[in-house]
Image (cartoon, rainbow, N blue to C red; front, top):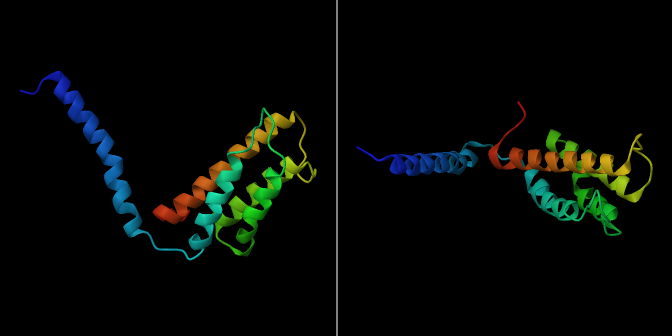
Length: 137
């Protein structure tokens, strides 16, 4: 008979191991999209820029331009995750550069936080698409 504490430890071990096993086999089944060779390094550059955005504080000058420069290689791509990441990165950069292309009613901090969240969400979707073959189908 297994004691209660050992059952808990074993249960936690299985819970922790389950996702690791499925993650280790998922990339093997995915077909490689050549656009991912561009999306993944661009995603790393965008993430570094996103990390500098402070919706309720002071974002360093030039971060909007960093995002524009980092996303530029996405302009040549046509997959849905690349297009979405490019568009949301552009929206975020526009807000940071105060160019008014995507102006909305309400406090700037609220919209900046929402746009940053959307850009990060689409970055995650692009990575999922490339790593696990989540082809939105």
